[in-house]
Image (cartoon, rainbow, N blue to C red; front, side, top):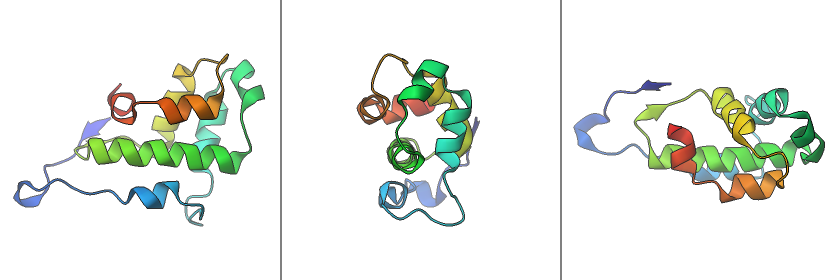
Length: 109
């Protein structure tokens, strides 16, 4: 994790949250978050994971919210997804847990 420089003129950077949560998946980033998440998820959690596309959408949503809350912090997308997978309770529903996350706190953790 590294801190990015402050935005010009002291203005906060904006994030297009819709880009991360939209139903369209950009061809240049196919399932990057879902793949990173699955690779490190505990076996019990992996059994409960939804289809890759649904997982990708949920992770893009939380990533977009996190970046909106903390535009000054830069975490590589796959690293953030893997971090979430390591912290996820395997007994809980994965999509419900992801949706309930306080994105900004998870991004800084």
